[in-house]
Length: 265
Image (cartoon, rainbow, N blue to C red; front, side, top):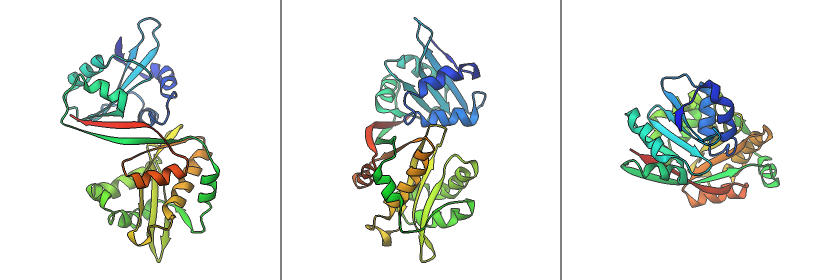
């Protein structure tokens, strides 16, 4: 049976999501930040007909849908929910779960990224975090200096117009943090988290100025960022499709746990 979820379902829903807090960081964060009674956000759950236990969940956040299940689930039923909702733009989630859903829906394009997770502190992070450079934690006053760096990085160009607004909102709301390193009066390395919640966070926007690459500076900043989150009892995760970037993360202890798929409807 599939039905709409409400505040009364919080406890069993969170118990389901805790089985994989990294994969579920977006759903967990949205529930913690917005609850169940929002026009832009809805949650549906599939309940086991035999025992009534929650076995799968589907989140709508504006026009984006994100499914999660820890086993086989009623993908056809969730697909019907999406069709009935209208104005659907994207489905995203762990590859196996999202793919099952798209077997019942038409989509225009798809994209797959490797999904990596870090769950425990290790000596590599402790060592790398002890950087000889001065690593700072950003405030809203550092937004322009940080974005002046990312403006120069090709992979960030598509989001350049929104970068300042997005970073300001994240820092102001406390749903993420940014660490950075300066040299000669300018930001030369930065790394951020987003979608922080009580269990997990995602590493994003790791960038190094072209003139300072090959010195291991990004590794130090990411290590400090990850070390602080792990010390708070949170796991880290990230998406990547750049093999060179993947090597940096794996040296810090990140392990590939699968693929994250995005389907544009």
